[in-house]
Length: 250
Image 1 (cartoon, rainbow, N blue to C red):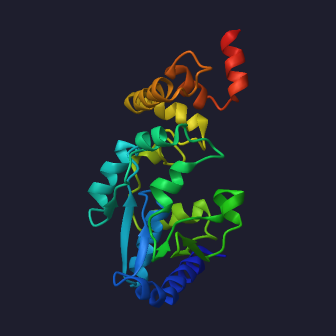
Image 2: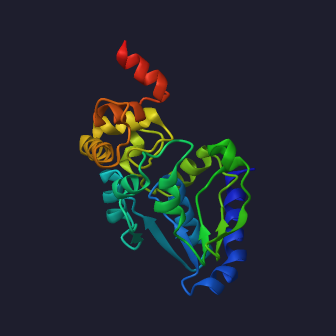
Image 3: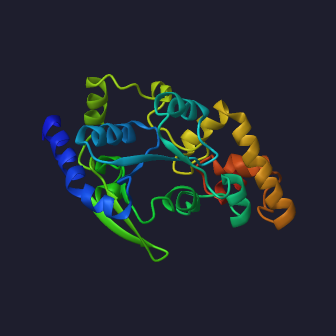
């Protein structure tokens, strides 16, 4: 499908769903705005559609500083939502670092937002196999409350997104000049990106090390490691715990 047709379809989805969004909130759609390229497209499409919406940025406490500055400078009207706990407080409470298959951080820091609302997101099917299974319109229940999800660009490709922004001279965050995706510093989904970010932002790595140190001393966690630094190095290695520890002994 040509991009122009995809744009028309996305706008039509937003227009058709606006009445439902207004039943939940007077401001209309709860637009999940990450500052990334996909959420920028959703933001622009919502304006083109003429629907009511409020954009929200879910601050996690481990956001790249370039991203925070980009949102402040380019999208001052976006409302920032701060979590009840920082990533480091959450890790201490849970007693473990988040892992690829145990990403409690996403659930707590991001997914609890948008309750009792129609949430417009920038999820695309070509991002992963899991997202390819998603539907344009979804409904979930969180703690007895509704959360309705609308994914207007689910069928868009990465090239569609880049072309859309380029055609409209919409500036993207400078981080895209040096990396493919933008996420939290220390995201377990990509050990390679984690190592890259720890080199770029050593203060974030130090904060993770300090948190692990508290877990080791106060909760007896990760006792098989010699230091908190070793734990974080294992966490960002992409290797299993046994393999990493075996290699350290050799």
